[in-house]
Length: 473
Image 1 (tube, helix red, strand yellow):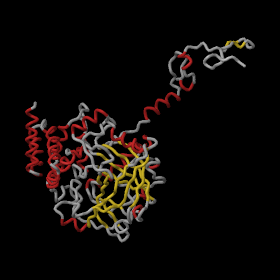
Image 2 (image 1 turned 135 degrees about the vertical axis):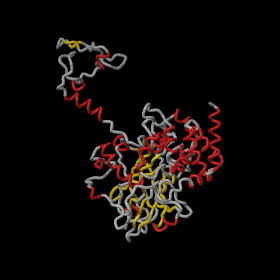
Image 3 (image 1 turned 90 degrees about the horizontal axis):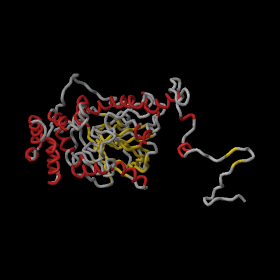
Image 4 (image 1 turned 90 degrees about the vertical axis):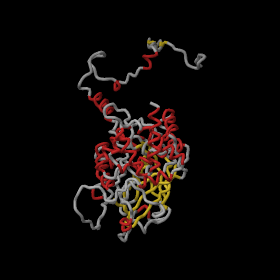
């Protein structure tokens, strides 16, 4: 038997029959070096210049620089998960939507959590609007339900949307946070008072996606087989109790783990647990709209849940992590216009504007064939597969550009302030004052007038708190 050395390997020997030495005298770096020709550029000699004709090199580099897709204009940072939706009851009296016709009916889904104004580096605990969009893979097509965790928006006409988002974005001159731009926008936009009151409460700094309640924000329409149409608002209610952070807690966690919410989502599902949310809706008969003190299609307003109670529809269970982040989360393409029979758009100005632009944004971002990507699941799609809204409705009037008739910009902001406990009011006041105090006087005074119009105590307390911050300078 051959003799083995102490490490269990055969000793190096010279092959005398071939008069060649088989011992490898290369240095460790030479042994590890990759000698595969495909890993080297084409050159003239080992030290010569790279040839223009090296198409393999061109393709390798071009593929690398183009593999990162264009980022979303909003909701840039996000996470995703697969799951299923189970209907509690038949919603046939209210809608023809195929996935809501039978109790216990199961529909597979994909959901994306996101941050409205964000970059890839935005901390998960930042004061931000959190998005929650879900694709329902129904037997009659894909239905997209796009929701936010703040139940209202800061403008009610899509014409103002670009300016609103730019006001929340980093400065165009130095790419640094620019709170002054936002407060200047608020001063020019009185309907934003309700949104500000919600975003600057502790609701603006959520602890986890697991405890996140979300809302459709806009008003939609459901139509049943008899052609009866109703206004509808969507609500996702988490199985866990809602949990928020103070401004100080959010800042601390942002430094310790800026991806804490996404990490918790991934680890929870990887560990065999689930995230669950109950879908509820509010209904309003269309003839009830005229009797309200506000316009129910105004996305800066919520509907009173005593007057328009929640109806339980079904349960969403997220139970599986994505396998490929780029292909499934980043290439997921959502649009409010992705409807199925029985679900339509209302005349909500913001919703109408959103329905125009989302598909165009997806074409620019991931190409004209984005519906062929598996997560979007729209094989053999053509425009005639889209569901139109409002067929059969009789509409007349004068073409114009105007504000809605029932503005009422401040009532609900004041009502929300009064609904908060004393500690929550304290946090809201301090969160606003900590930013607003550094704005120019005319902006401070304008915003304070809105807050005071919502509630006198609200405005007075923010003014007092701003004075305290100014004294610390």
